Length: 307
Ligand code: GLU
Image 1: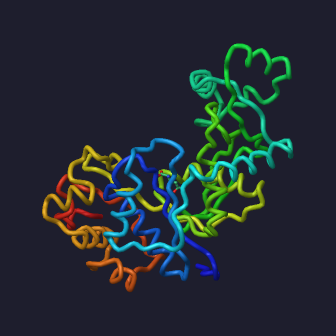
Image 2 (image 1 turned 30 degrees about the horizontal axis):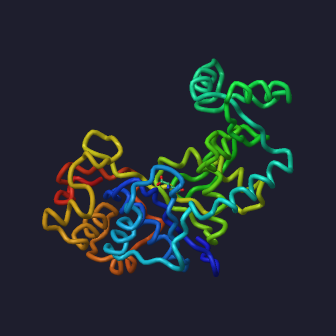
């Protein structure tokens, strides 16, 4: 794995609530991948959507409490609107965008049509005439802006999943409410922070070919990707707040320290360590478990249940 001078890994939480053990484990993995490959580690707060007041500050406190440190200022997406607008202008000037007036319902109906790739936008508004656009505006619809993609799929390479080819459709760049879309902002911000290694949960793997394709159009080289397994509850579903004592503050209330949490996460990765510094000494990026960590309600104390 390359460790280029100046490269960085990152963690980019959405400040919608407290980080749970799954988020902390992904953050720790991202930190370990970066720090053991000579990279900087940067943070970004994805605060264009789903913001709960005070959540970002608590998330940063929790990351620091388990021993994660970071370089430079924390980037907040809410302060980056001009950068997204510049990228959108660049794509629009190159003829690579179009306005889309479809409602969510219309898209769902079109996407269930035979032969439509799963979840892909079928291009309904791609060839609208000026008159048709004007008519839709007159109905009071405010358009989203979509990428005019020239491929149907795109291949990326992932440290955990190998070569992965996934769908690329005419993805949304700016939503109807004017907010830039995640698939755009992530590409622009990773580049702005010098990120060349993206470690995140494998629920985001399917979006990655879209992001890498968009990056290519914007002449942003693809980072190294590692989409790591999630933490699941006893029913095999993605861990959530309702699954019990899943946050650091819940664990503190039970008398467990951040070191206890780090050692449980280390155990789930196949290591014995009580601190992130100890874990860093032994961590091998080539040996990330392939399976999710199944966390029973009191899972912290049952490491023998981990795969
Ligand atoms: N903010 C996104 C999330 O919490 C993650 C973005 C990313 O890692 O690319 O799901």
